[in-house]
Image (cartoon, rainbow, N blue to C red; front, top):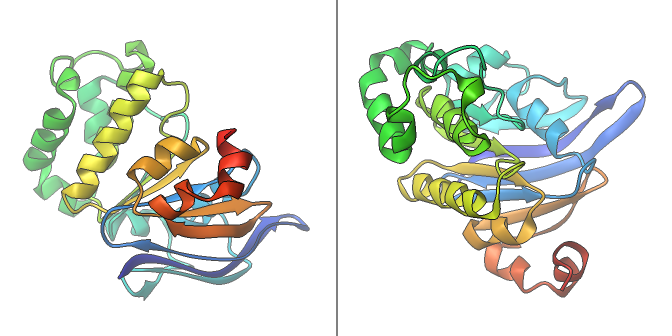
Amino acid sequence: MAILEIENLRTGYGEIEVLWSVSLQVEDKGITALLGSNGAGKTTMLNCITGLQDVWSGHIRFAGNDVTKVKTSDRVEIGISMVPEGRGIFTDMTVHENLMMGAYTKKAREKMKDSYEQVYQLFPVLKERPNQKGGTLSGGEQQMLAVGRALMSRPRILICDEPSTGLSPKLTQLMMGTLAKLAEDNLPVFLIEQHVKRSLDISHKAYVIENGKITMEGSGEELRKNEQLRKAYMGI
């Protein structure tokens, strides 16, 4: 079953169309990946899902309900949480203060203690530095903090936009492993990435977007074996 459904989504900027009747489904378990190069339309898709971009036509459904015109703040309330590209942490705030910013909904405040325990269990390094300013953390630690802040909202789906950007191969592997663990713990993950192989290794289902259109879809295993995909994105 799908927790997030995109149906015939069209949008753009001014008179320029960026997404052309895009349809996809994010399953209610595991990791669903959206793969594509820069400029393919991935970020525009996310902005539509989170309410930051107006939809020209089509529908966005979450847990069976149409949220196409729902305000961004209300989408967070119902369980849609995103880790933005570039992390987007508050650099002048401490680790603790950044995490607090993620727990502003009523539901999140009621479960704040449990959320802290989950975040610190996933990322012990953050537990050691509650009073350190976010801007002084390493790139990998900042990415951990961004994921931790998103988890503080008690999401029903976690959307991650390019989580490997700026990370070393070792830290990228660690982050992908963390997302896989969250998915195993019954938190659906929608992963948006340029790094095709790393994403397919942990994804249950994946889509490829090119020039605002979905060009391929299938299980992670199926797409790993796709010759066209291997030549175009993996250099194999």
